[in-house]
Image (cartoon, rainbow, N blue to C red; front, top):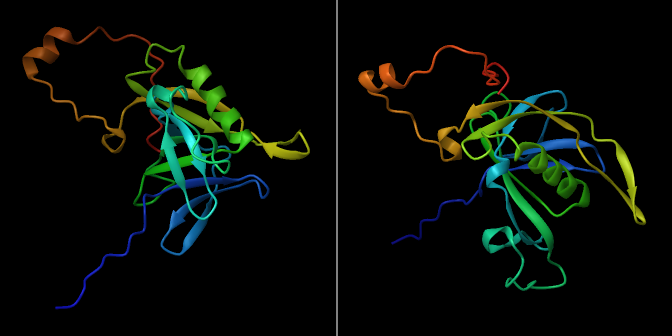
Length: 195
């Protein structure tokens, strides 16, 4: 009997190539450029995971329990503080709208920290996903090298897509009639044409 194997392509991912100042997404043929500057996507920042990340000879990830390194020893000198977070866009990411970004680069750590701090003060932080417009990523000096930290703007909040663990709402007609709030201004913005 022959041995049958399935090619493991891994989870769809997105990367920011700091030296080239280019975003890229995984594809069947490798890393494919994607234009994010000036575009709006969802970033599931409330579910960001912190941990130890080593990228030498592949990706080795050790998540910190409760995003806290206490009690989680650094596995090796090659491991650095890193993160993992999901990006989401049906328009920009093709047939894999949910893409994982993981990095230990200083500029990307600064990006995730700034986005988290900007988003966590909003009451929708735990229940919705921010719509994030990606801006420029100017080069800046860090120690003996340089890095880039993408700028951003939170432009609104969306319901959590099913691909990010959201549930499809099931409303009964009587419950909707009783609980529907009066029409009022909202900070919810639909970016269906971009996201």
